Image 1 (cartoon, one colour):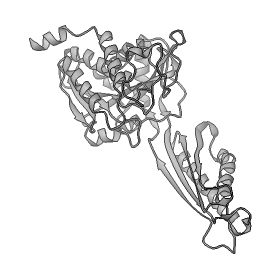
Image 2: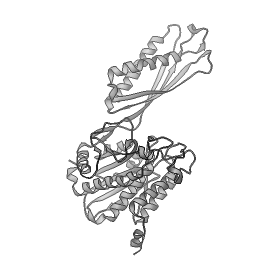
Image 3: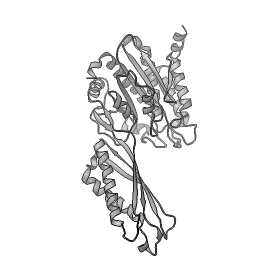
Image 4: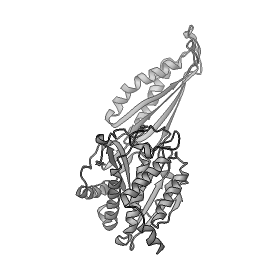
Length: 405
């Protein structure tokens, strides 16, 4: 009777998830520090009788068991916020961040609310489907190495046959659903270069090997060289920092250069690394002097971040057929984007898909993109997100052979 009493007095589902989203938004927490967020998620699940546990430190995991044996599908949301000071707008006055310099500027507050809505809906319908639904509230998507690998290491995918995830996007029209089979989001790769020369006074350059000039040579040559090796439409590349020197009349001994690049396959990643290495070797040869030993030299360090996110073609095709029956504006052949996501790690382990749900709405003056200090969500998409994820999960549990071959 106690369980029935708790469920009876819950707010209607849409009101409830909006309330939850605003709660999360008001109290954001940074990656690997989502302690109160974790407690709020556990408490929210308890409201309708679902027990849960912790995973990956500050994450939450819970299983909804159906009416008999069957497959298991996981649903994941991320929980961390960003180090951004939120700007007050006409919309967010009731729920603006209470934590200075921290903000849910990427939609993760909405992701959590949507997954809680899915959890409540499927828990109430657990006698209608076989198998199991695993709910994963994952910490630290925003900060490498991310929380996905921690979830996997903690057994979060044990017994899971498929996985789905959703991301709210500010540059996609409200209510629009976008995804594609195969590569959908890029890998992230950062590089650091240390260029060593020989310092001295600018009035006597004949005694010096200027590392600033070497760095400039690298930067000016990269664009042309890389375009010959990798189609520009298949990658993006940018130099982010160039640091070195102390005064205008002193040639420094070394310069540090850093940047980042994104690709959609490992071959292009390796090619770009080789281009950087080849140019650096050429620059060293060009600046080498017989009268100055030991320099120039360089160190190149490439940090491979999140891998390419690859939607399973069979799973994506089945989900597309389902979604097009129930929702308008479903684009199942969307162009891949150069953003990256640690959801990619899950898709390396089990089949599944990741999709985008648009929240851009000029009529409500909601036009800011993710990571903006004024980013906000048109909350009408929250219930749509619940319907999308729950419908895919239910259809998979009843007809897994259509999704997994």
